Length: 352
Ligand SMILES: Nc1ncnc2c1ncn2[C@@H]1O[C@H](COP(=O)(O)OP(=O)(O)OP(=O)(O)O)[C@@H](O)[C@H]1O
Image 1 (cartoon, rainbow, N blue to C red):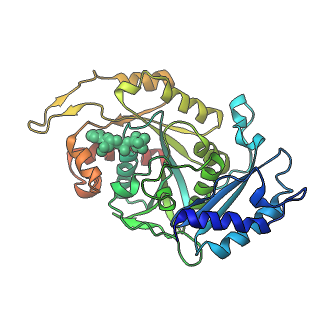
Image 2: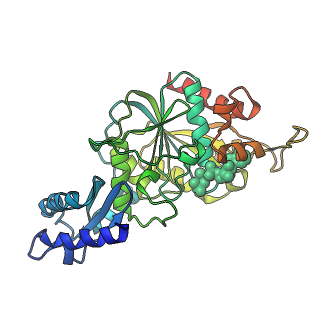
Image 3: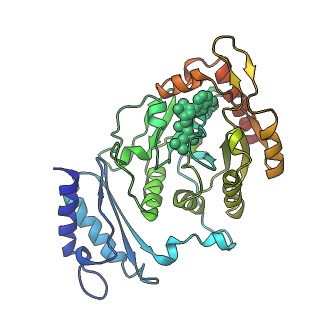
């Protein structure tokens, strides 16, 4: 059955779910679009402020109804209200209590950036591999809902990740345990998940994946500062965030914005990595500081965060990474890998 057909059937079946105040969920104006992917069915119910708890039984009933139709897909129904949709912390309110750790995961390092396209995912993957090369048990969670690229970077083709018991089974690649939010999305489909759905999707990926026993989970965040970040930092203890930036980006306000958010939410900042920092000519191996030198270090100083290191702009990083053969996995002693490995060693030293 086509996904759109299934979504329509699910919507029709929600007329059996009663909502507070009379009426049924199918005809309720707060019902969002129903998203169907190969492994999940997700939708949100927007309710008036203060009515969240009253809608709890309707949510439970909706989940039961959807399960009978969803062919084993994960069912995600979130209740949202205007109040919840706005990030409270932005007005300087105290950080919410009750953050928890993820079962089986000792530490979480998240990798973020002020804006897209700076090489955040490439850096995340090679950092995770470098941490594994230091002897740690490492997992990798691709939370970049708007451009999940970790599976491609690690050469993972199989998208199925949901076990019969409803728990996600991570993929294994180059010794890493890997899960991607992409497993819940249809390839090529524009992401239409609304904020609360994205947050609840990430929560499930994080909490309902069989990570086994990990020393570190590296999370590739979406660029910028959005619902995914807020949801993660509100609910989960993140031990530190690494910010990736390019030399051109440093003067811009984006990285500063990301750092401001982390500070407001009391999330430790591990430091700044400058990516595509200098150019290594493929023929001669000569180094060219095309953007000048020391910019990132100065920016890190100005932002009052540690400078973790610089990664060169090298064609082979692009070609190999995009072909699913990250340099740290395929040539761990090579020059490209060593730039990432030095940074990972700094991070490991900071964990002791
Ligand atoms: N150090 C590098 N040298 C050469 N190419 C690089 C380097 N780092 C990343 N790239 C290339 O830049 C492109 C963007 O990288 P990547 O997808 O990692 O960025 P991103 O910040 O995660 O982007 P998005 O925000 O779209 O997720 C890719 O083609 C990647 O191979």
